[in-house]
Amino acid sequence: MQLKNYIDGKWISTEGLQYIPVVNPANGEKLATVPLSTKSEVDQAVVAAKKAQKQWALVPAPKRAEFLYEIGFKLKEKKEHLARILTKEMGKVIEEARGEVQEGIDMAFYMAGEGRRLFGETTPSELADKFAMSVRAPIGVVGLITPWNFPIAIATWKSFPAIIAGNTVVWKPSIETPLMAYEMAKIFEEVGLPNGVANVVFGTGPNVGSAMVEHPDVKVISFTGSNATGSKVAELGGKHLKKVSLEMGGKNAVIVMDDANLQLAVEGIIWSAFGTAGQRCTACSRVIVHKDVKNDLEEMLVSALSSLTIGDGLDPTVKVGPVINKAALEKINHYVQIGKREGATLLAGGKTLTTTPPFDKGFYFEPTIFTNVKNEMIIAQEEIFGPVVSIIEVASLEEAIEVNNSVKFGLSSSIFSQDVNKIFKAQRDLDTGIVYVNAGTTGAEIHLPFGGTKGTGNGHRDSGQAALDVYTEWKSIYVDYSGKLQRAQIDTEN
Ligand code: UN1
Image (cartoon, rainbow, N blue to C red; front, side, top):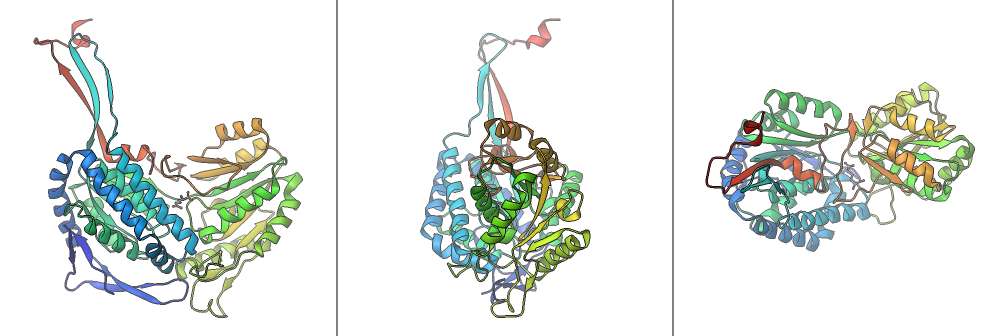
């Protein structure tokens, strides 16, 4: 299948574009080909989106919501179909793929509900016979740049709040996972979303992404991806005075205190470190453990690893699927070699699986645990984005928090403890955008803000009510019904 861009409600195949294969990371199977679009396709999509936005903004929000409800029902109806495609193109195991589609369904219904809220404020005026209120106004055309690790969920976190608020969207999905975007576009078409409200342009960051950021009619850019790309987006966006929302890396830690339920902590670590083969921004890549329980925890973690079958995620017994591509495999392996050179102890894993079928055709890396990791080591500081976790020993809660906060990222953190005093101190002092108590670092719910501090972002949030702030401008409205010109209080008193 040769994928086409979805622009102005039509499937457009442009003459002369280069196409590249979409490959199943589990076995190398070619699933489709995807066009590498250019600035000209972006321009077409923006023209369509700009034209559609004028009308769309005038559709009452509860009516806009009806489309989102329909999209939610379609996603529900197609859940298994979509999950299987998702596993094939991205590699995550089938139960996680179902979970991700569910995240999209939840987001559709949640944001559809916003069609009857989109609350602003009413507030008294300083003056008699005058009324004051604030409302959320749509901004215009928004550009979405989404990653391959959550190809459908993250797209819904961004597109649904944008659409419900009266904006239109030009979406550049990752070229690693275009099939999910193609399926979403089919759903937009099936529910009769007006032409131009949601457009999909396939291509690379340097071509399509940059053209979106530089386009004068794209007013907001929402990006999820690496820090290297995110800072380029911010720089270019800044030059063009764009509102840019960035969601980037993490170096998330689970803290295990001496009073923790260790069995629970082990389950939380295994799931959040090795689920999605460690390819979540929220994945646990550090375990900060109290010295009194370090040995026990290590033994339990190593024995828990034996239950993690590695393989093709379509096999329901598999718990850890492949990583996205060869470059990812090489990057993970590179960090493991660095860890060894830095003097960390390899407790388990550490190898690329390449020689025997099915591993010879896919991109598999063993779940890997390093221990005796020092906080200043590279493997304790940089994002690896694979199934590799580093154990760091500490002697107190204060030290644990200090170690947690010493990285340049601030997405998610977790503490396992039974002590309410420690838990409350930790949730206050951990400097991440998301904090979990007695759970791993993953599993954020869509109706809460998603995002992080420091190098993880630039102050914006996906999901929850907070997402509406990205896609709306506040408008303050004063209505004077006194029948005379009333000067504002500041202009009458001095
Ligand atoms: C991501 O890794 O980019 O919190 C998103 C979670 C998921 C989303 C992760 N709900 O783990």
